[in-house]
Image (cartoon, rainbow, N blue to C red; front, side, top):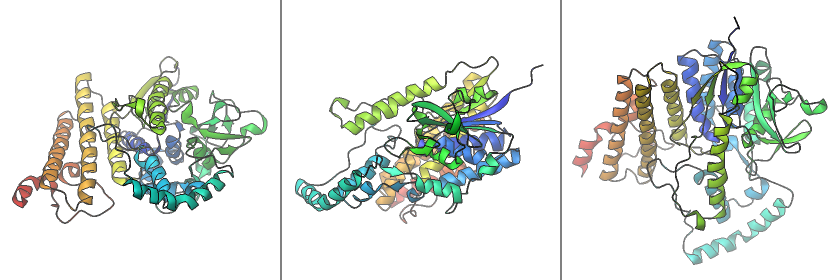
Length: 465
């Protein structure tokens, strides 16, 4: 009898959306005891993979899964992840600097689910005020122009992230390459070589292999390279981050070609493959008039949404050996942006990934599975809407009675959907009661005008009015 193949985790790219993957991994490892012998990953998934690849036993994977959870939440500090290139730093404090910050973080955040799909542009004020801001920014523009001529080809740098992954600190645990290189687990981090124009992978011991995920490159091209450099290269989105030098080439984000490296997992002998996505397979419809949209908006929609979705679907459809079982755990609701630093949304996305994994893995019939998935998505939508509404209420010291009533309605949706999952016999995270009885996580404290027990806020709100 042919021995069973390996189990693989395939962790896709998606920036901060990797929080969904961390939640799904937590369920598979901690609740089901699934231990992979292969991990293939891209971009944000590569960061997750490097943390997990330090483990070999079930107990070690549980420990690393919890470590990954804490690492990602610590990474909601932008200064721990990104550094600004000199030409961008020269614009700090100006209208142009604020606009760039807005585009990187705010305009890449998905629309709130169930609301209008287009965000209003950042407000710049009256024409005279705008002219005054431009005049004040002129010296900064000149400094930025000089520094841009020095050859900086990106907005940001991932050097702060690389430093934290190497040395740890401020809530992020260091990655030990020696633990990753031990026998017992095959690791492949997808990268794209700009000079060679080819997909390649960095292995657990820092070897660079060809696009078949097996064959070492000839001569000095194969390295070995530093594992952390391989992780950062896999996450280096072109134009946002600079290419990373590895061996004799410059490398960027593997998601340009292989955002969900299922074929690589199969090439390494995996016959049970869990492909965990970070970005929904189907981008939501967008009814904005793109014939009149700005160039960045068109680029984000065409390349960042439509083309990316097609690439993901292609990555999930390789020719696999007979007997290979591919399980796809994917988000339907888009919760966070790729460069998001909102801790509350990250926590929410982790919970969503946990439940989607539970729904997908459950041994139930098609109809109850569909009902469970619908309940899970309803929870993610209501909680995401609640988080955004709460943020507005935080800014306005509690909002209005109508705001509080609307928020309470969203919490009832969460409560009822959780009850639906329980009726179907599906688990939920241990703190799920808090999702409907309290507030989501925010950086600032709850305004005093808001009741501490949110679910009972309806009658109290009526008394306040």
